Structure formats: C-alpha cells, structure tokens
Image 1 (cartoon, one colour):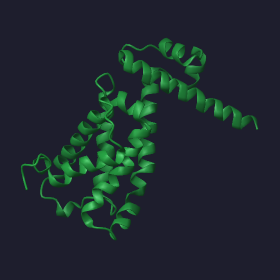
Image 2 (cartoon, one colour):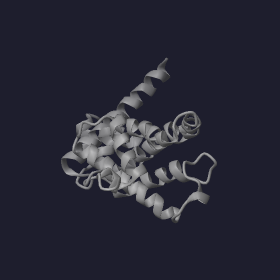
Image 3 (cartoon, helix red, strand yellow):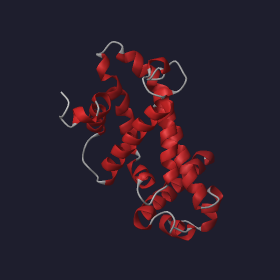
Image 4 (cartoon, helix red, strand yellow):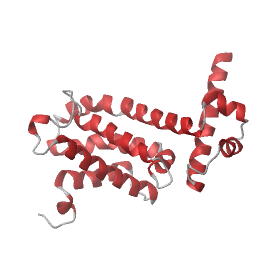
Amino acid sequence: MGDTNSDLRVIRTRASIKNALIELIEEKGFEAITVKDITTRANINRGTFYSHYQDKYDLMTKCEEELIKEMENKIIKNIPKVISDLDTIAPNTSPFTILVPFFEFLNQNRGLMKVLLGSKGDLSFQTRLKVFMRKALFDDNKNSIFKQEKLLVPPEYLISYIASAHIGVIQEWLNNDRGESPKEIARIISTMTINGPFFAAGIKK
C-alpha cells in the first residue's frame, strides 16, 4: 500500500509546484521567479523541490514536455481513427472534427497553456507547438491529414501559415478568457482555415 500513497504524494507535490509556477508567471513573468518563490507558494521545502527538478528551467521544460507528450498520445494517435470515422460523413467536416479534441485538451490545460503562450511565458514553447502541429497535419506517414503530392505550395510554408494562425487564435482565446467552448472555437478556426480569411470576413462569396 505504501507505494500507492507515495505515488499520490509525488503527483500532488508536482501538481502544487506546477500550479505555483502558473500563478507566479501570471503575476510577474517567468524570468523574475525564483525557486524560493515557487516553494513558498507551493508550501513545500526547497529539498522537496530539488528532489523533483534541478531548477526553474528544468521545471518549465518538464511541464512543456509533459504537455506535448500528452497531446501526442491523446490527439496524434487518434487521428487515423478520426479520419476513418469521417469517411462516412461529409468530407468538409473533417478538419473541424479533428480540431475539437485539440481545443478540449487546451481547455483542460488552460492555466499552463495560457502562461506558456502569453507574453511572460516561453517563446520556445511556440516552436514546440508548431512541431507538434506539423506532426499532426503532415508527418510523412500514411495517416497524415495533408498529402505531399497534392500540395500547391511548399509544405514548410503551408505548415508555418496554419500553425501560426492557430497559435494566434489560441492566444486570443486563452488570454482574453473569451467564453467560446472548444467546439465553438474549433468551428471558428475551421471556417477561417478551410475557406480562407477573406471568406470568413464575408468578402469572398
């Protein structure tokens, strides 16, 4: 039984460290935070912190890695299933349906996502997120959403355009605490992505 208790304790400790990190980044930005700030806020001693993380940078990296790994497990691995399910539905619904789990995931991890993508967060995380999106949309695998042979533009530019647009919309959604549900935000971004910004603006019929 002891193992289960110690596992739970580790999970709880890490969660409180992560929550302290999120609150502190929101308050004063990552650069200004010290390990002492984190331990005081999380109500733990320094030894406990250092038994889990080397320093605040290690903590930030591990939080980001966990997030990306979880996204890969929950989203990328499910893409083939979603695509096969879609063959039975109207084809133009596909990107929308694929996006919903992605936005649901972002919503569940809203606090961390908001600070990572915010102005006081970590710019390198955006690069990681773009790499993740590249894998989801367009990895050289048979399950990818985009097929190389059908592209009208170089893939690097297409990926960069779509990923930057998505990240911009995600930042807007998270930073301003707008009330749209994950489903609604997926519909909004699909309208812009599938039909283009001019269509979304009501210019192009």
